Image (cartoon, rainbow, N blue to C red; front, top):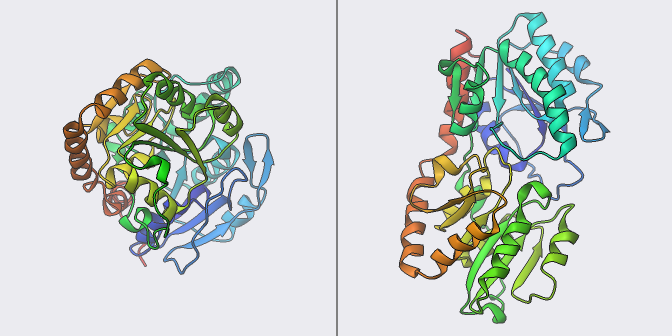
Length: 370
């Protein structure tokens, strides 16, 4: 079985390794690591075969000129396409190849019905991406969805519900909890203060500017906002927070550093304008934090059930009100944190693996086992 994926994302390797222990899996990565990402890719002996394709960047798109050669070098029984607009050329290529070979084709999607698009993205989506994905969806044999928001998106585009298998957005505990916690004390200036934490990539789509605006409206002296991450919008966000000693930018956080801040936080905020899921919410919930997310987070309908607040995207006032409710009531924060842990421990990496296996069984009587 062949799975096409955009890049060597560290948070996906555990899932691929688990799958590789049960089926004969090969993963073609369209790139090693996007230049905008600072993550460290763990090395090790994995149970799946892999190949990193030659990648040429053309604006926001990745072109893989060696894909055809790689496809012809082996024979696969099933093809899984990880839907990602950045690799649309390779998706079309693999789609055509699978149809030519008359092999089962599965789409792994995190798309949702979101309203956030800059003008050029909106035009590209309407006139380029949507027609292409409609064609691919029409001729695909099954779908693996991030969650219920993606399932709804696929059904609205005529995918048969019985061919959609949900539940791939999960993390293992050792991906989240620190192996070697930083040996440093909590900053003295933050001692005794309630901590609102946000960890994200910094671009417009993440809506972090609305969180900063909401925090500034709180006008409290017993809180601190900690924002972890990096990205193209870093300068803009720091300018928005200029002069506020109670707003801290940590820079990019690796696993152990993230765990350090999660363990000191009181509230986690994810103000995204558009996200297929939002795995940082999983992480925060594993640390027992109450969460504030927007309706545009794909995880909202499944993970937020009495353990936080769901607000409208781009609405600083609603974010402020949610934060105020949590900051004002320690009992509420504790109760919601307990519920977070209860919910998230049902989202296991084994369940994610099973979603893949159910889709594979749906399209073929022969699963390529080890």
